[in-house]
Length: 291
Image (tube, rainbow, N blue to C red; front, side, top):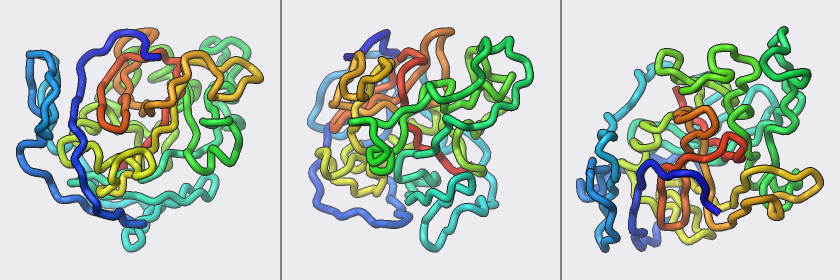
């Protein structure tokens, strides 16, 4: 069940393709100009073409990168294999290069329930400075599900905002001056902002991002799986039985916050993607992007 107010939509008709994805880092060539994001103040209309449009007069097309990129790759990334090793827990992730960006090709699976708090004052969050309520496994809420699909995090969780006075309780939560913002990502990687997601959609067709088992062709190797979402977790219930559960889409985290109570997320279905406001209590999937 979708809630709150959509800001604008990214609408793309899925294209047929039989290409197989790579198991390591994959570079995707830039599609033709017909697939570019185009600024538009008119409402979105379905089309048989592959154009991707934004229905907002306030948004502008993004540049090829919203942040200056370092020429130095992080030491936890192996460019020969395309593998990222998270030094905190030893988890290894596939990555994919699309355009000039290098993304994780799997959802993050970092367990934060025992993450140490560095905040000495309890004024921020009462007497509870732990993160055990800020992450959950999808599907049947088992560790096997986390291993297969990655963990899902609230906004407090993916920003690790209890540990950072610069973003805790603020909105926009992550100002441009401190982006790229690592948050819950491994060192050298960060939680992407909206412009960086927009750059991704500018460089590849939507169905090339979606896993084959969920109706895409995954030509890009991004391998987005449709794992469902919920707005909050009732203690003792599995994820699929929580309030607001919807199995038809996945919601990805961004650092672009809109209000005190809501945050922008990338709502992705098999053949449709949009940016929409969501409660900060929503559990988001996280795809980290290399700095």
